Image 1 (cartoon, rainbow, N blue to C red):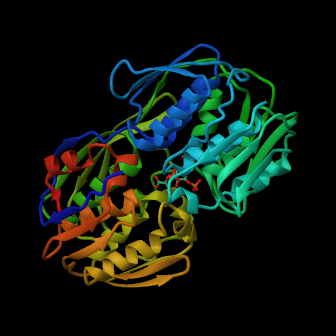
Image 2 (image 1 turned 90 degrees about the horizontal axis):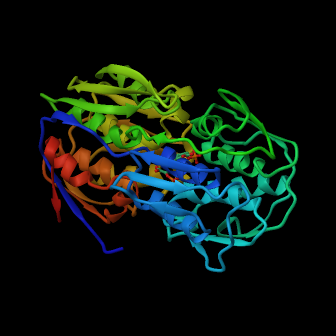
Length: 434
Ligand SMILES: O=C(O)C1=C[C@@H](OP(=O)(O)O)[C@@H](O)[C@H](O)C1
Ligand SMILES: C=C(OP(=O)(O)O)C(=O)O
């Protein structure tokens, strides 16, 4: 990947209507369930990001045929639960933790061996959180001291377990449920806090019997998946950068259309409302069992808060953007209970703290969060640490900075948000190549 640096200058207000790209979590899962189903699955609104394309490429190596009638569309020719064929080559998940952890569960139940690899960032991320419980089900997976590559031994008989993950993680839950499709008996996951339930809802839509309620999911192996079309909503996590931008730049009024509003994703709205934001949800409707709606975000002065612990898992990918909102708010914001941020594409607490300090913001790192003193933001040169969400968050900070913010290493934005720069500049950002 060639290096890309950005320069974000004071801009705005943010005006007009935008549609952000399709949801990453839903796109990964639609590919996987479409591949394992009997019949043809049509996906609309598919995220053309590097993470989801890596998952499609892996499934292609395993014998699944895809068509791309137009950008954002995929036709998946399902091979059935036992129709994948092995690949002697390593399967490259790129930057995607979701891709690797879900595929680990899916591949643990196959008759063939597989090796999952990832880029430098993914190769540093913890995998025991999935390989240990998959091991309890009878899977055999070798790791590099708990990190990728994952060498998954095929031909193992899996059996269902009841598992209580130590951290709230939809990736852990989903890996176990995917392995559970191939296991004898029942697989049950009981979570410390409910996480996004796309795996459960999509399994049901594809005809697999599953019992689930927030925080609990249970299924039995040995059924069949039947192809069904999937409409992917716009990704709330991508919308988050524009939501925060419109909240903090005076004079803004921005409509984000048809955004996925799964309640396990929208903690940022609750956090910003506590801080004084003016965000309205309009045209709320249901599509494929998911809530979607338009968000109308108007500028309002924000004030600092002590973030309630129970909304943390519902906004786990939105913290870098929230750090920026807190840095511009009046007063102090305290974030706790978010240690998971340290094991994302970068250590997001450290990345945000270093970057905000470089822009003159007073921020104290905590092991599981930060204390941020809001006030004016200065310019500076910061490093995204190759993390898409850090890069886009500092692009938002640049809107209010007294001098430009130069953001290093932004190519990874293409993993989750292709077209970010053009969409941002169309809405009022002043973002250019540095
Ligand atoms: O299941 C998913 O699609 C995801 C789950 C979350 O990770 P964890 O399961 O590690 O919390 C999130 O951070 C990631 O971007 C997508
Ligand atoms: C954490 C993220 O993704 P993943 O775990 O799939 O790499 C993210 O997109 O913020």
